[in-house]
Image 1 (tube, rainbow, N blue to C red):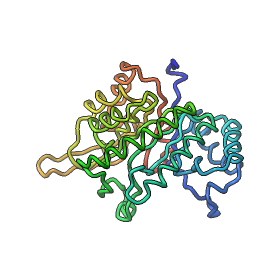
Image 2 (cartoon, rainbow, N blue to C red; image 1 turned 180 degrees about the horizontal axis):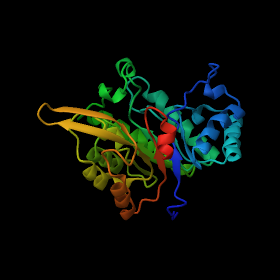
Image 3 (tube, helix red, strand yellow; image 1 turned 120 degrees about the horizontal axis):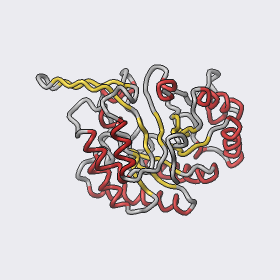
Image 4 (cartoon, rainbow, N blue to C red; image 1 turned 90 degrees about the vertical axis):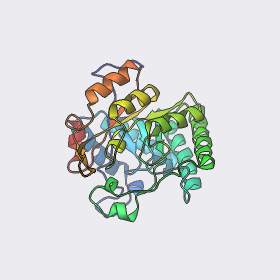
Length: 296
């Protein structure tokens, strides 16, 4: 599909919305009108698309009847969903990998039922207690995929290929979200993993923000863009300030509006378009009024 600057789908992430309401009721159990109340905030901010981020609501855990309610609610408020993002559900998690694989399959089926064309998954795991205790979770090291472990790598390939095949059978694309310290944690590793999976309906979600916010030396964003964007089919976009002190090795990062941060998205998007990128964008931002920052 060919988009123009006016019609290109730019979706809001739902990072700012909790998975329980003020009354303590889980979003999963809320009424369709309560869902609509949240989604109208997204519309009021200026969006016509929304990423169904599962930190807010898990479509894969809704019954068919409730999925139909969600589909109708999206139409009622005037939103379309270019993707469902399944967050921190690694299919090679040493504890919950099997359950996450089953959940990912349910999410693909939910996407098909909702008419959502793509599901984004990753290999990042839940935040540790130490990460949850600090202001910015990425300033504390989290779980890491075992480097050089061929058995675990092959398990990731086989399970993600299984998801891609399921997605293809129901007309859905699969996107792999890049994230620090996973097998999708560098441009080279992400491309190698995707190549090993070898499915036409699978691509990368080159979430550069997850990598440039690391408070340690990183590959240049220009290099990451050049390597990954030719393989992208969906794109979480966000930006960070990054300050480096070569004398001490200190690196500090914090969230930034897209136009103000370390990555020039003007150049990154030009590169993406030059390589034929046709996917949707999902705008994310941590902290403060993230929805308004994303809207701007």
